[in-house]
Length: 252
View (cartoon, rainbow, N blue to C red):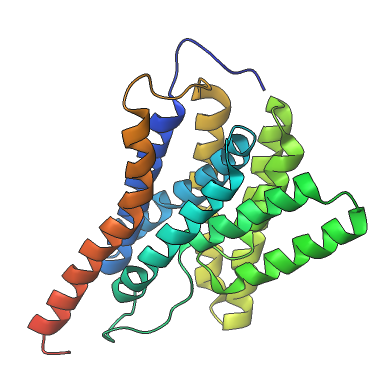
């Protein structure tokens, strides 16, 4: 894929956009703004996960120490887990609702390790399937690992990247409909599949046509740690807000 353009958005700029849309998604889940607005905020947030998976795949080859990278992911995933559970436990004080998105990205990272290190094709497929299954109890299960494999296949080829995004969007829609059919809310799942496809396609547009292939010119080290710290930090703020609302309503 053609990169290093003079104009366009840097990788860090797109990541800032991604954490903004993620925040909208989380706030939309927690706060009722009147139905339609909350749903719009939730659907906009679907931009985030697929974008971060793309950058994970792209950045893997440039990571100086893959061991240190995986350790950082694991540490911040653990730090985020209690705030994640506190933020999205509904009307209970806290309950286990699955593992947070950083654990999902850690699984995606392990898929990249398998792709690089394992030479035997049969073992590769087996390990891919195991890791995909391990994601079942994480945020954005199945879909993020599948997106990782699609972006591995696409590499730096622009046309393949567009195809990978289209395949991912189709898979996301089918997975959503299947879950709805199993859960007995088929009409809602059709709506979610339709509107939930918009943000991944927007991510495709941004990455393939507006991304200049560069990092920010200044503050790279600050931004690196900011992206790690923001996830558990904003979840903690949302968790405290939710607990305060429940306390004021006399629920807890």
